[in-house]
Length: 316
Image (cartoon, rainbow, N blue to C red; front, side, top):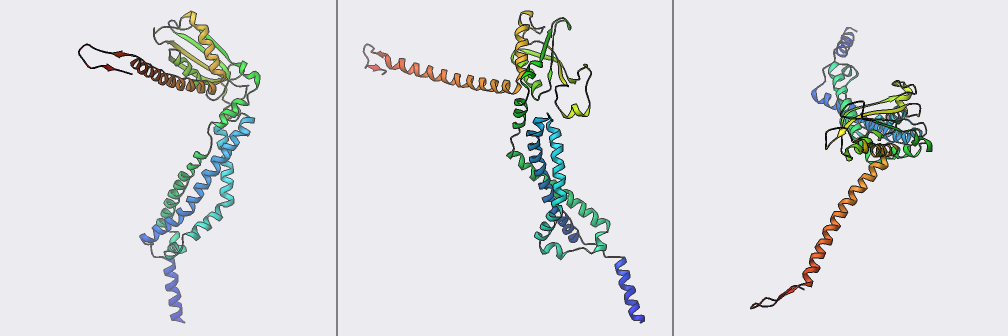
């Protein structure tokens, strides 16, 4: 009996103070923790990107949600997918890892040791980071401009008339002040800025923001997430003529106001039109060079010169 008791005491003592895991065991444990997290990270980003894009093109268009809000809702579905399929993915990847993981398996007591916990944490971080990076490949399969186009097409017919443009040469001496008010639509600021640059204007100062119906800055959660007619865009540009360094000439203010209003109403079409114009200008230059070359060749063929005392030389 004493011998059996001694053996039991020795076994209990060995279990109480387990042998520290070897470096190979720690690496294997890190890999074991990383493998399922690769699949989880890939699935998480895949669901979020596609769900967020679908929501942006449907609910985002209907309720004027911003792209960031649509991505946040997509993350909800991504989290649900992780809860539903997390255990299944973990089982599949661990089974696929084969005997290497089980060959260097840690005991329950060794898993509780600090070195094992750190190895598992590092492996999980590396695995989920790699999986999320792989998940970014899904960006190549979504049309990022589709939602913007649908949102512009969903604008009410009368909403384009809500834009207002004010131009004043008296507020800032030597400078022109442009104030644009209207619905907050993606691309308006970029379109107006490009229009000002193409018309020879330099922007000295820009103050962009959202205003509520009472003219006070609106920072409510609803208006931060949505683009409703109750919140209007109010952009203030202080500009000058690039050539003269002074305010835009009074005679040119009306034309400038009209092009700014056109750019504000349809920013995407304005950018598209500008690109088409640039492309046509390049094609036109190439055609002009080709016509000039053909004209020179034709003239050369029409001229024949015979000089005294020399053989006939002609160009046909």
